[in-house]
Length: 453
Image 1: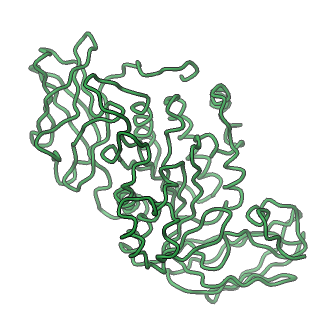
Image 2 (image 1 turned 180 degrees about the vertical axis):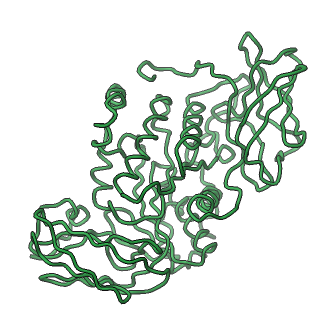
Image 3 (image 1 turned 90 degrees about the vertical axis):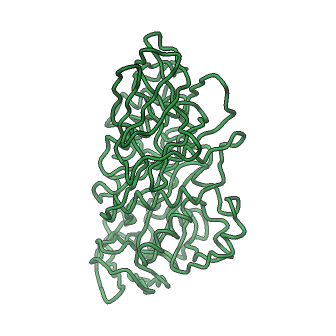
């Protein structure tokens, strides 16, 4: 029996037992294996069949279980290559041009999927995309070597992340991408995860959206392929249910980490950008609450980071084309989370606000080299008093704080920043990283549908 040249190949890890040794399509020519950890090689064979794998001087053996599945952990490999991966049992498979380096999963919805060919300065970027040590795989397909001929179809944020990481660390980089346009987060979680959180399962069923189908189609073929971490760019599809989203993302991260069995691998969340027409009156929109949920998850879940993109959005298109800063900011997060480098990985994050003498004094973490405004004056701050009516406010940077005032308020009670669907805002640290939107209050007036609690 020969391997089937169809979608069944991508799902062979969960297919019925076969008589021959077989590999999922993620183990194919030009692949990248994760360096410096015991990378896992897995596949199928006849029940109890002895399987041998060889690579870079290593030779390992295992037997398939009664369901025909087998997996073997390699001794940690140093970055480099190319190597050949030989897998043999009753038959033999040779995977060529195997590199060892850094492997990251890129997932989410359309702003992750957004191709390099449509990104800002696409022609220039594609012409310069001669990076043979950067490799890219869309789940269900085959590994591609990065070149001007192939790079246009790569997901823009993941491409810029991979190239920047490769240039920073001087090692091969592999991207495994399984983002889906228009997807909701609950499509990426396993049914097993919801068995352990029945209340979340009940809430998700009320939302009348699919659950777990992307997990079944796009994760089953690749788990437990060894990765360094995950990049997540999603949220637009869940904006109606921000509180549920916070709980869902917490469970999703735990679910992925449990499935891979690698401990708390780094998880980088890209926060929603701005989108929509700007209005004179304050208009929160549902996006504000999703951004807050993403921030809270990053603050609460270990080894998780937030990449802020509030400065990159467009008025008329939710798909902002400027993906290069997204990739570069994700690399900064990875440098801190995954590689222990002492770099500032975040823009300013709200710490606390105190109110005195008609002013709000706002403190931040992740100051980096200091606070700065991009533009003539600081914008994006709102104040309210006891009546909870919001007013646009004046703000200035004083040392490590932002001082916020309004001529309409003698006694401000709460402060917000960038708390609109597409705010005009420009607070950064001197590393060029934007501040996350925030609010000091807990007024829950942005929930627009029942069922989110």
